[in-house]
Image (cartoon, rainbow over the protein chains, first blue to last red):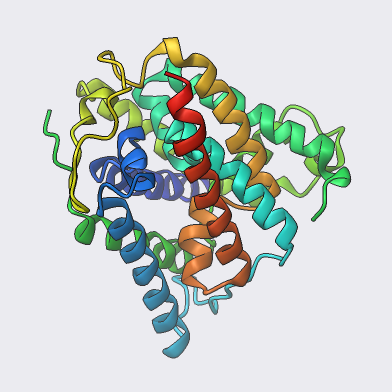
Length: 141
Length: 170
């Protein structure tokens, strides 16, 4: 029962996140194109205020030492600094984002909205992940 | 179907709230692209990268199920990705670009873009160790240098795709 509730809570958080993204049209190739053409402030406002909210939340959690619902202290870890991988991989990811208008979360949402297009994206993403797994040790990090 | 998106100053903070929600309720740092690694390791663990403690990423798989379910819900309500063509304006507005065909971008004739773009998304997000969720939203909220560098990469890649690839595909 506890395990089921745990699974359900993540699904519900996913539904929350996907609903906001879809209502904001952040999943749309057209909005992403506008962003990269600097035609609309919408996506910049969206990303900027999301980061500001996240940063403010982290500051409040740290400042008041707020614990999780299970009474554990909140630990926020930094990802390892590997600039070649972060930057190089970032550019490759950005190419995919610009081409398809989808990043990872919208990819899963579009799988539900239009499964024929979503499955192409997902197969591609899994193939790309597999390719990375093969090449990992040969790539600069 | 209404074309107006939820205003950025409402939607943006709601997106950002996923960071404290996941931390306080579930003690997880927001991210989503590790789910690709999790999915592959469910099929094969022969390659070192996929032979890892995959339980740490199980939650992202459930989170992704929530994303797909939401998409299905919109689908049942007749949501059409091609109905969002109208620009939302700002910065002078104007239509995105006239090379978008009348059938719209979300058409199976563009299958190669989706498939190949998907490969770049999967490869790039794993190589850079995060995507727009883990780096742009979570990492930037932490003022992490790693995520700042990755986010600059995302935008450089996106600009290259937009100005130097997409116009030659249509």
